[in-house]
Image (cartoon, rainbow, N blue to C red; front, side, top):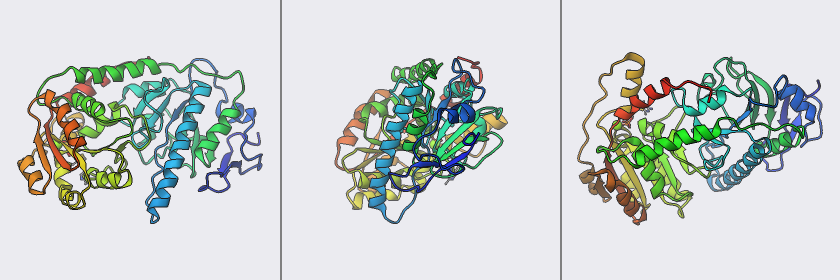
Length: 415
Ligand SMILES: Cc1ncc(C[n+]2csc(CCOP(=O)(O)OP(=O)(O)O)c2C)c(N)n1
Ligand SMILES: [Mg+2]
């Protein structure tokens, strides 16, 4: 039992070559034995039917004073981890979900992709977790969302892979902790897997179909104001795979995080954990400075936009081309949604906006108002191709919010 349930940690956490080492027995640095899996992670788990599930990297962004060097380093690390996650998933044939923060680290068009978890209700992807005995959690931190969402009974074996030790919880009881470079750790874990062990990726295809059906519903829905599914669909169509969208905190973030197919790390950014409103516009300025070759879109609720809209001045003055898509409902829509779910009523969430086109133009930006559902895609394309700062005011109909949570509440698994 020397390595079973042991904490395994990397000798140095910040270098590409940092190998994973077992702190108890100082085993060969980049290898784990098959017994490690059998005794530690898969103890009592049958190889058929109930697949382990990896949850993608969530939290590798760290503030730093050495921006450029750190940025390059982070990109390389994301790319390595992303590739290792794909290898790992393919070796075991297991489903992989990402957290909202981790969107893109596992490509959503991979057959094993389960989408993103972390929504406030039992979403499609959660049904994938329900049937898992083991969760291989890579870069997950309980601060992003309460692990009760992925391990409601606290009975799943957790394999925690991260650069730092796990914080534990009744719903996050770590059976095996591996500290170290995630890509190396994943390769070592996969190599130690007994040959005969593979899993069935379970309900992944069904879950992907359900997500895609929502996008298709949006695509063909001409209602005005626009349903959020239509907005997500048009944004995905307007942006290339490597372009960057920042979804600000609000109902729009929920729809984007759940539905927006993301293919590369750091191409769909959200603020989770503290979930600060207003991050997307300054975030878009930073993203465009860091990635001048990519087109950058900040999607913001009207409340969030008005919290930080003065940053339009910075973008215009510094000639940083970007597009702000403002979701107009004249309300703190997410708060209304949550109050309705928790209390069955809402209050004090309404407000009025200024004329957003005139407001944008006053800053020297270009302003657009969407007046039919069909206008959004061409306006987005035009604004994204412009070498300037643009603001698009898009009315949305959030009656879809409660419809979604009602629908999810009536779903029964397993599937
Ligand atoms: C700085 C800050 N204040 C308050 C909150 C709490 N909060 C989360 S979402 C939200 C409302 C967002 O409204 P809006 O930007 O209009 O987006 P919508 O949900 O209407 O699309 C509020 C008040 C927060 N997350 N951050
Ligand atoms: Mg709003």
